[in-house]
Length: 427
Image (tube, rainbow, N blue to C red; front, top):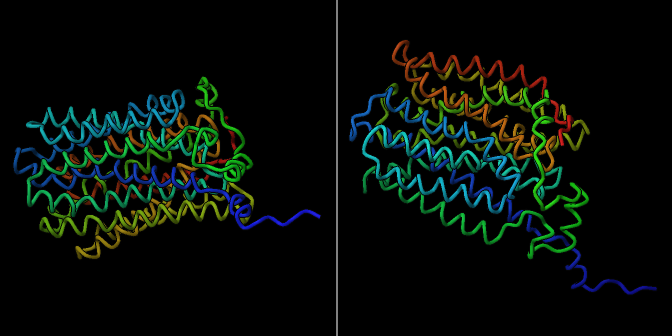
């Protein structure tokens, strides 16, 4: 008769939590991505006064980031798949953090636009590479939650940014937030490079129990570079449906990320302090939507055993909710009610995000980064078009038109959700 394991032996059999530390580092990266991109939106009223930029000029500066971000999604995803998440994510975070800080030294529309474009080039790789980095670590039943919590973190970062930027601007001027935020990114890159490894097998802080848990869920992942099967990826109907859906999301969410602070000050008459508070509320609601969408989708998949339905139904519900609540947010005469309706609308939009980013993990395997990069390219083409069109729409028709267009795109996004298929494996 064999002896029972000692308490120490039992403890040694419990899985470690290295994958959760990896997830926490990715969460921190997502916070930084949105702090660095939303700081400009929060500083716009002061920058316009200081440098004399028109609304159209600001629209093109916003768009410069989005075009850089959109064009370099696929190269960024490819870089992650070729050299691994440890090196690739370190490189792109250092790049975009440098240009975040350099934005503080711009003096004209051209210099700021160029700096924001190059900042976008760096941030383009963030989400595809991070998705690839998680693909070899997160259990299949944790993917929706992982994507939900990471994107929730990005919205929390965006929500925290307006009051922080306003506080720093009041005391030190509008240039200080850009410089400081860039330094935060450099510190994160050092921590990532020190802790993360491309596969659990390479990691020093994981025990055999957690390694087996991961392997049993997702199988072995190769540490060496593999050729990306672009022909197979680009022939996937699931990828194109997902990408078009994400275009609708990208166009819509950009209004709240780039223009909502300006909307509150110009259309609703909020002062700078009020704007710093109220501009944060829809983004906090969006963070809740990210958490709920990813976790509900995972739970439905576990309970009903139908991954396709679990992903598409949750995304569909999010788009429908957004489409409905954008309308009263646009037409109400109460400034407070408009913000509250907008909170529900952004909550609905963000419910779709955990699902959208879980699907590249579901269908992509080792090439999740490249698949996510195609999807995010389309999302950011929508975001690139959005700020310039909004500036022209406002000039021609007033502030209502951009939001009505957004509501219509949410309806189209809901229809596209019916064609999502998380079971259609590409790799």
